[in-house]
Image (cartoon, rainbow, N blue to C red; front, side, top):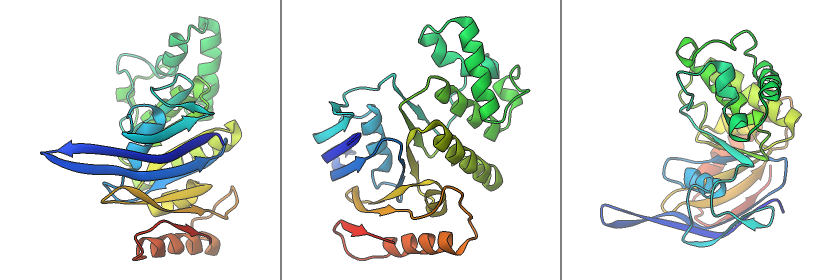
Length: 256
């Protein structure tokens, strides 16, 4: 198994009270899967993502990628957050080249790679612009291109489209789904939006709060080309809605 989480527990202390962010969470992920971690605020989805990415250390249990325990962030994986993290004094091309510079890639090769991914995210012609000259959606495209340029094994995404307007968000959902398929990347994507999860995921990890835990893992039986208005899409969406209303507190396998 490519990614394996076993009985992961993570606790925080807030204002003198102990809070369980993850309670015996176990999950297996295949290489090349698009996984959405879906749930309300406080369910542990970002904590689980951060543990997988190496930003958080769990209190007990294990988190492994390719058989190795995750103890710190890896240069083989990248994380894309809701805030774009672009350097304002750098142009689009120079922002995309940032990771390549840290990997000591020669200048001529950096330019070729940067152009490829700038074109891939639909920003051809914007290479010399600075972040302040771009819309929010365009800035997130630069962030995605920068991440893809270093050819990561895994892309971690923490509500990356949450601050965008609905139309831009839907377009970027289409783009990241297409890119992930073409580039054959493993993607772990945090969201609280059910329709977004159904549109993107191969499997949806449904999480619940107090304490943070996995309630169910749902395989999404839809083709790569997904129609948000199609009966099959709406059927899956409605089943996920129903799942959040189930009263059972224990983990269940759920098949659509």
